[in-house]
Length: 66
Image: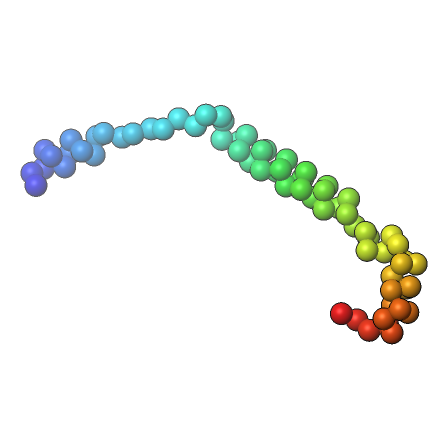
C-alpha cells in the first residue's frame, strides 16, 4: 500500500452527531434509576402488612418455614 493511500484514508474522519446533548444521557439515566428506586421503596414492608394472616398460616401449618 502506498503512502498516499494511507494518508488519504486517515483524513476521512466520520462524525456522528448525537440526537441530544451528551449530559442529557446521564440525566435521563439518573431519572430512570430514581423512578425505579421510588417504585422499589414503595413496596417496602409489604410482607408484614398482614401479620395476622401470617400468624394464622404459621399456626395452621405447624410453624414450619417453606
